[in-house]
Image (cartoon, rainbow, N blue to C red):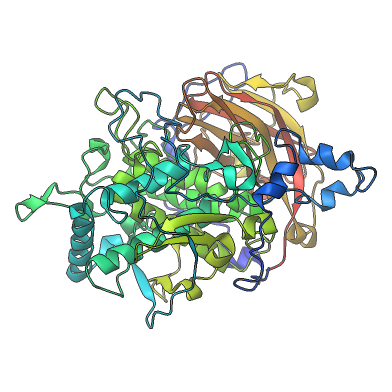
Length: 614
């Protein structure tokens, strides 16, 4: 089956012309540039858990780059074959004993003095040793349900389970506070890579290929703990189905402060009040409301999901995020790239739900900062749907939609308290099969996912014009470049007019490398490619010229702590849809949205990325 037959070219919302949004989301025009913008096989379960011992790791000096060390090994390895052994002296990220080796987590919390939630995110110690994970032998599969159509019984059970968790003492490993702190500890500098011999380097599970598996394990245990608290072995979490029009508003059960005169256990006071009632979530949110009609917001949201799962998630690392192994510093590892869902819809929902930055919420608590996100019950239904995105992506019969096969990913591990209050070590390799984990998602078997039909409509040639202004080529620009204003650059493509067969084996990808930004800020910039629209026609995030955005929630150690990352955007479809597949150069436009005053870009290039067959 071809991808074109699976994913139709024209949006099912063609009755909503995207160009009608022009005035609602138009940004300041850069007159000089005339740019207009608005708005493979899974390994055996436990046959490969032999990790490099910390003592062996310490024999390799932590501050010496592994590849430099290899070059110096008396000719044992040569520069030409280093690319074939990327993990020769690497090791997977390994979480330590979370109860004995843990420190206060303050990374990304600019205003620590006035932080609403605690920065002491270490879990309680029960004096237990770590066990290896064993797959459950449950007789039934837990079926996660769409939050917007939950039955009264499902909603009541969910509220009761969260209330039971809230009623536990804070120092209990199953308490609401302890569960919220898990995210803080793993995301805001609570643990280091000491078990791999790099005690001076923090573990950060965002902005890399750890993002999806860590959060899957987090929710796996969270769900089973809730079920045990209400003695329901079949208990399943809801998921916020923001990829379907009816499910895009925040679910109603999270809205009221009280239910029948009692506190609603799903309520959180630290949410953006403007977005709670009768508002459609904005999956491309960057801190400002676009104030567009709901039908048009729905169209843009569906296009965003399509980009996240298909256009920008066309190969393993583009979807999961870049390689991150022991010895890598989350701050300085500029080779990383953020996965398509994480940088797209995931981050937008976090910011959209979180409260505005104001004296009462100086760090955008709760959902707007990683350290506090777990205190909002909406975090878990949001990430339940993010986890579902992994399943939907994998279920698409498209080339490249396979999990990483590198041992550094397969053997990366984390430690959690399970439903029995035991410390358990889990591995990425054991997270790939929902059948073995005994949970799944309720889907309507007759449903055609609306985002599947939401590839942006092909650009009408009559609305396009030849480029009249001179755009500098990449080699004419001195990088790094500060993105304090719109940047437009011409980038040479590796090939033009590739055949369908060639496109099936390699994706054309725009790589924006060496992005350095202040990790204490929320940052967001958008990327447009081959905008050739006539005056008066404005490009929006619903249109084919929109490649996607780069967004980051605060997670650095302090203000002005600069972090490095990269971003990748799929061009194979975009170039066809913008009638530019035959152009030798592509015009790339970066549009700063927020927090980009000090953000710099190190390089921009277009590459061909081979994809693995399904």
